[in-house]
Length: 247
Ligand SMILES: O=C(O)CCC(=O)C(=O)O
Ligand SMILES: [Fe+2]
Image 1 (cartoon, protein in one colour):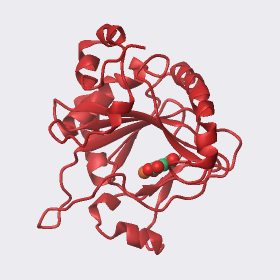
Image 2 (spheres, rainbow, N blue to C red):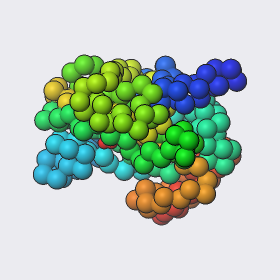
Image 3 (spheres, rainbow, N blue to C red):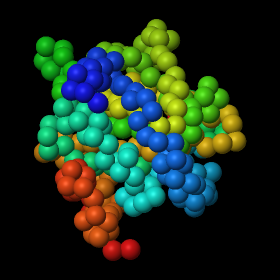
Image 4 (cartoon, protein in one colour):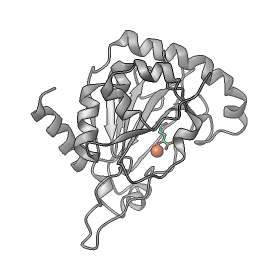
């Protein structure tokens, strides 16, 4: 990707709240991740049915920084790194690797931002401290629970109220396998119902600005030291805060 294209994506995230990098990852790589995700989802099934953490039959599961779920084609993609570095600074680091999965029985979430949305005294949105990158394990369709988002809504302090009152337009995002959605989690969005029998899992990476520790996420993940050492220098820098664990 050229510097100009990176700048366009950065500008879209600022203005609209997100951008989609189409066909960034080879489908066979995504298929490997999706296959590895399946048993993790199944292992959580009792909890998902009885005590789901994102609404009915919708669950957020932390994932291991370990192949086949860790794939350099996603986790180390130079375009994703370039975009998050342009927004969050050169010493940005990954603070989260997880999945969002609506299944049959899921419903519309309330309109929300994933973090606080703060404005400066003159009413401007503060610079972001967190950017998320998602890649979907399956093609997203109108039926399987597309992520719904309102363009530019992170700049509007009343967007949630307006969306709730149906005074603002929004759109579903139909990610294809291989696409990567890079978004400012303050842009107002919601999960929608998956009415099919197939899971709509997405892998999520969270990137944090250095020095804005909110803590939390990474304590549940870990990375084996020998696997960490096998990564490129660039990936090692991005994943430097992931706790080293022996498995
Ligand atoms: O599942 C989705 O598509 C979105 C979920 C979401 O926005 C959330 O749980 O915060
Ligand atoms: Fe959300």
